[in-house]
Amino acid sequence: MNIILLGPPGAGKGTQASRLVAGRNMVQLSTGDMLRAAVKAGSPVGVKAKAVMAAGELVSDAIVSALIGERLDQGDTAAGVIFDGYPRTAAQADALDILLAERGSALDYVVELEVDEAALIERIVGRFTCAHCGEGYHDVFKLPTVAGVCDVCGATEFKRRPDDNAETVSTRMAEYRAKTAPILPIYEARGLVRRVNGMADIDEVSAAIAGILGS
Image 1 (cartoon, rainbow, N blue to C red):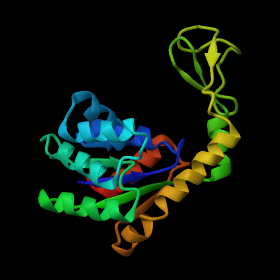
Image 2 (cartoon, one colour; image 1 turned 90 degrees about the horizontal axis):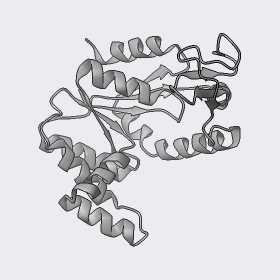
Image 3 (cartoon, rainbow, N blue to C red; image 1 turned 90 degrees about the vertical axis):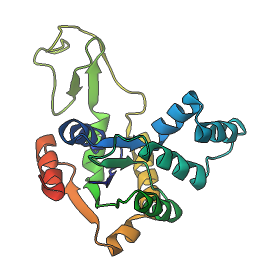
């Protein structure tokens, strides 16, 4: 089962991908992580990518696609792949079709977590974590039982991500729309797109995705 999982920052895409990895043995392929790993490992594609980045240029579609192909050949993707951050252009979408076909496979679904932008901003801006154990909280939805004291470890220091503000989140939403706009019509025309309410409870979202992918 090969899928593209789409969703703006804060939609819960990472959580759902982690559940698919744990529950189905799928492999999550994030191009950013893969680029860093390839450069560190000094693989043929990594060497090319390093030279391009060192020159201050953007890594080409060809290099990114070669990186995906290199990763697909590692032998641990039999249970399926979650493509994260790829493809982002029509050219990359075409390249992915070729890469999968060459390996006797194909793309099954494009699953998009739909969100209400205003509600998502409220969700992200209000979140904070315990500085000691990392337990997550929210100004509206989940405050500590005792004000200022972590429910889990009893610590009294909390922290917020500096980019969890309305302006930054709105910018990231706009970037997401710009990146997905070129590829969604391609997959919609092929009947591969499925949409899930990303604002629902985490377990409900997982159940909806499971319903799409089948048991």
